Amino acid sequence: MLPSRPLSRAVVRASLMTFAATLALCACKKPDAAAVAAAMAANKGADAVPVEVAKVERRSIAASYSNTAALSARGNAVVTSRASGVVTQVFVDVGTQVREGQTLIQLDTDMARLNVAQAQASAENLQAQYARAQQLVKQQMMSVNDVDQLKYNLEMARAQLGTAKLALQYATIVAPISGVVSDRPDSVKPGNLVQIGQSVVTIVDAGHLEATLNVSERDITILKVGQAVDLQVDALPGKRFNGKVVRVSPVVDSGSGTFKVVCGFDSQGVLQSGMYGHLTINYDSRADALVIPRNALLEDGGDPAVYAIRNGKAQRATLKLGYSEAGYVEVRDGLKLGEQVVTAGKAALREGSAVQVLTDAATATATATPAPTAAQAAH
Image 1 (spheres, rainbow, N blue to C red):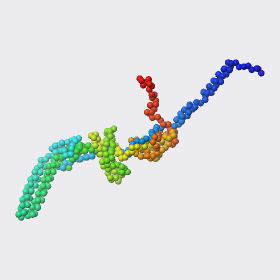
Image 2 (cartoon, rainbow, N blue to C red):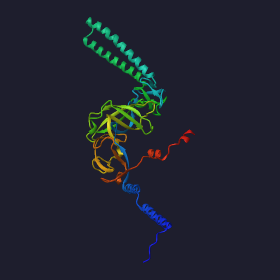
Image 3 (cartoon, helix red, strand yellow):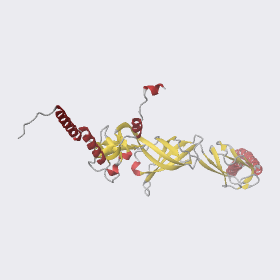
Image 4 (cartoon, one colour):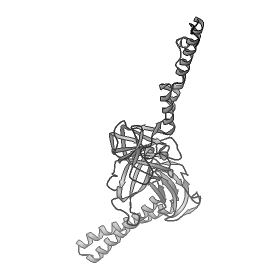
């Protein structure tokens, strides 16, 4: 065996450096705890179902009935002639605004005036004869039967006078209601003959309109006269009109199972008869109801339910619902204030599915845009 010799200082230094390098290499190969946690979270996020959610909140909500109907004039009068005669003047045309009692058409009155004069003379003559007969019967110079006959003739003459005066009055055709002339036949013009019973003018009360709803009998107890009605018409998008229930039929049609509810509106110079409208009648309201968006409800044919987010997982919650209005539905039982319910992504969920709540667009934009620095703000 050869005797050992002490190692040189250079050899020892090299050995130490090699050992330190080995230790550093081993330290680099050791897994980092933070990196492992991030990887696990990323893997978990990849398995979770992305969803959009809304919170259960409190807001006012109204119970309402909605339906569609066409508007019609509340007052509609087809004016007919009550006398025969030749038209001498026409004072209105389609679109003319008229008031009750206003003259519409004038017929020739010559013959009617002659008839009045003749009936007047006959009545006056018989009146004089009857007066003399009363004196004669007192003197027993005339029988009571003859006096009674004169009295009868006098009454008949007075009736004929009244008829003649009516015929003269009917020669002036007037408006029975206020409104707008919606129709006047072309044949009704000066020089043409008008017969009794012939339609000469149609007037509609354009200032007051009505819409008649055929309502299911199950709602007969909730709709009442005086309830407010909101109206939107297809011809005037974006505009809303207020009205009220003016009549409710107490009788249900046995064939259709419906009853009539009539709603009244002022035209405000805009609404027209014949326009098609969408009507909403609010019959009750709650000022502090627990509500969720309607699109959170599951459409699987079962009881009303939603997917609620609980402990990071989707859990089916069966609900008892109340009123519904403007995209929201009232929750009477099944959820608590502040809970999150899934509004988008429901189709991919199952009971107990892990979920990843997506950040809404407004929050994402705010997060992605860095706040300005002091120097940028100064500029």
